[in-house]
Structure formats: structure tokens, C-alpha cells
Image (tube, rainbow, N blue to C red; front, side, top):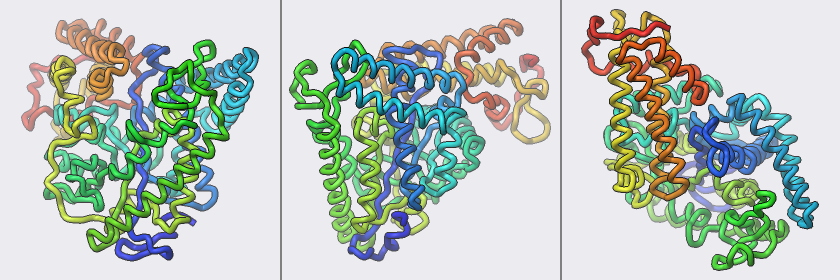
Amino acid sequence: MSGKESGAAPDGHSASSVPGQFTLVLHSHLPWLAHHGRWPVGEEWLYQSWAASYLPVAKVLRTLAAEGRSHLLSLGITPVLAAQLDDPHSLSAMHHWLGNWQLRADEASMSGNVALGSHEHRLAGEAISDFETRWRHGASPVWRELIDAGAIELLGGPLAHPFQPLLDERLRSYQLREGLADAQQRWGTTPTGIWAPECGFTPGMEHDYAAAGVTHFMVDGPALRGDTTLGRPVWDSDVVAFGRDLQVSYRVWSPKSGYPGHAAYRDFHHYDHATGLKPSRVTGKTVEGADKAPYDPQLAAAAVRQDVADFVATVRERLIAESARIGRGALVVAAFDTELFGHWWHEGPQWLEQVLRALPEAGITVGTLADARANGYVGESVQLSDSSWGSGKDWRVWAGDQVSDLVELNAEIVRLALDTLDKMHVETGSGSGEFVVGGLRNRVADQLLREAILTVSSDWAFMVSKDSAAGYARDRAHEHAHAVREIAAAVAGGQLAKAEQLAAGWYAADGFFPALDARRLGPATAAATDPKEAACVST
């Protein structure tokens, strides 16, 4: 029986008198990493997350769906991550990485750490079998199976995860439209809900969402002034913002007291440098890596059971208290990065499976954001202001002094790319609003736009602000900016053959979204570009 089937209506109560609905939201995202370094930052990040999070989380959801459970959670998968999980290069390299993982486990056993080696060998073997059986031809069939079974609600988003409030409105609208279209191509469904990148918002974006067919999106709790017990229509639109309940979410992911910090769980930060495996448990927050106790899966399993019980009790108490406060069934939304479950928190997938079983057993209605909207967990409208889920819940992570150079770079590159594209294109007389280059798709225009989109990924500013591989992040932003500049310069100089050559070279590394079509960008203004001033480049 699904959580939805076992629960109650918005203003009713279940058999065990738990009013309201609980919704779990997971946000799956990594920047474009293929062909951009391997270790310590680059493709290794993708393969670690794939092995430790995406494989086991999908397996958990598939297992529960096979039991007839549905409406388990809302799962956001960004288009740029989806593209990598379907990319032939990434699929081949991932298969190789899994085999290497098992070899590293064998090496640990041979060097004397038999317990660690046996544990990792088993995990690697299961991952290889799962990958070869279900993932070898891409991730899209894996997610589509779960969508079609009603196990999850798919949340979409813009193409390459830009911080939307700071982005040129024309490019912002394009990325959103194309991101939703990409989901339709991969999974046969167009999402009506999105996880806005970084939960970033500025007034007016609700109208962009409505125009794109988006009916609901995520914000952080403080954006709704802490009252997250109901979704809220934004300003004068019908688009609903759902807020993350921090009191519940922080039980899991809090820098000071979240579950992953339990002494029995595997320590994320300490590596055995000979094998690249993680041999230790947390042991204590002040214990140095060399002094940490060895990881014990049985101790960790006991801690998982304790934390599942604690979380279910927390959700139950929160629903009862908030429902009593507002005089109707309340909504509780807990939201996390998918990569927390397995990659950061080794035991996370175990916890996830047990929680999704235990919540309905405790009489708690579990449903998706779409369920919450459809079943009336929506209150009065809110005049939503500038916000994010970053530090301070404002824009400082993506617009603060630490990243002012990246903000300026982004503005420069977007302006250059759009200006160049406008000069390359001639508006049709059909009134369709599309631009053409001799009526055909143009590889130079497409790659110019593709590199501009990669330049403005929100990940680069986040990594700099958080001092997490900041050098890599700056290098990536400037690398894509350089691609825009040199392609644009060739176009401006009339060097059409050189522009073609440059575009082809950059596409070899940055060929995500092969269907990306610059003609769909749309006009800069209502006035048509003067055909006499257009610099058309043949395909």
C-alpha cells in the first residue's frame, strides 16, 4: 500500500490520528564534468556520486515500487546531470570505474584490511551487476520506469543549473523551456514541478514559470517567513511555492547535529590513500583521522534504526503540532540533495528505505509535491521576495564580494554571446519569433550558446564561496568564457571556417544536449534584426 493510499485528506486524520501530509524532496545535480579533469575534482566526482548515491537510491525506489508502493517522493533530476548519466563517454568510464573499485577492495584485503575489503568488494559487485543489468544504455530507462510506475514525481529545471535571479531574462527563459523539453525527450513526460536551482528566486520569475507550464517549485523555509505548513501561490499567479521545513530537514542534514555525524557511521573525509577507500567510522568529531576506529557495518545498521525512529517521531510530532496550530491538516516538506544519501552519508540509502516504510506504518500520509497541490495543501498567496537556500538565505553565495569577478564575467559573456547570436541571425517573416541562419541549424551558433550556458552554471560561484575546489571552479568558468570569446571573435572577424573549427573542437568536450538549437532562443526585442546587418554563417 502506498503512502498516499494509506493517508488522509488534507483536513482529515488517518487511523492513527496523524493529520496532514509528509513530502520528501530530493534534488539530484552535478555540473558538467565529462572531459574536464578526473582527480581530485572532475569525472571522479560524477562516478563516486553515481556509484554511492544514484545506483542505490534508484534501487531503493525500485524495491518499494515492486511492493506496490507509490507516490514515495518528489525527485529532481537536473538536465545537465541527466545528460551525463546518458552520455556514452560517461557510461563507458563509469563501467571501468566500478571495476576499478572492486580491484581496490581486493587490494585492501590483500594488504591486511580484510573487513574493509570484503565490505567494499560486496558493494562493488552489487553495483557492477546493477549497472550492467539496468544502466548500461543510460539512466533514462531507470528513471522512466519509476515515473511510469507512479513511484516518484519528477521535478525538472533549467538546462545547466544557472542562478536564475542574476541571469539575463531571455537566457533564463530559454534554459527553463529547453530543460523541460529535455525531460520530455528523455522520460516521455514534461515536469510541472521544478527544483529551482539553489532555490533562487526574484519577483517576476513566477510569470516565467507559469508561461513554461510550471505549477509548483521549491523554496527554502525562510523565504516563506518560516511558515512552510502549506504551499503558497506566488504574488498574483497560480504557481505554488513549497517551502522546506527546516526543523525537520535539519534532523538529517545539520552541520552540528545531523544524523550523518553519528559516531558509528562511516567517516566521509578520511581516506586510506593506498586504495582510495574510506576505512573509518566517525568515532568522534574531534578525533583525528589516524585515530578513528575502523568502520563496522553492524554498528552503523543499529544507528540507522535509531535515526529512522527519531525521524518518524519528529515528523509525526511536527504534523500534529502544525495541524493544530493552523486548524487544518498541515504539510511537512523535508528536502535534501540526493548526493547526501550514499555519497556523503554512506548509510543514507539504508535510512531512506527504512524511513519510507516506517512513515506510513506510523499512520503518516506520504505524498509528492504534486499530491500536496492536488489535495489542497495550499494556503493564501505570498509576496515572495529575493531568496535562496544558500548562506543567509539571500544571494551572497552567488553575488557576494568573493565572487564579484564571476558575476562580472557572467554578465560579460552572456552579453557577448547574445549580441553575437543576434548579429548571426535573421528573423523569419513567419511571425514565429524564431531566428534562422540560412534557415538551417548552425553548429557555431549552437556551440556559442552551449558554452555561454556552461559559463553561468551556479556551481562555479558556489564552489568559490564555499572554498570547495575553488581553483577548479574558477578555471571551469574561465575556460567556457574563453570558448565564447574565441568563437565570437572568429564570427566578428568574418573567419567562418575558423569559427566552424573552433565550435567543433569545443563540442568534442562540451557536447551535452546535442539537440540544443540556438534558433529557439528567440528575439532580443519585438523589432526584427535588420537582415543587412546580420552576419550569417553557413552550416
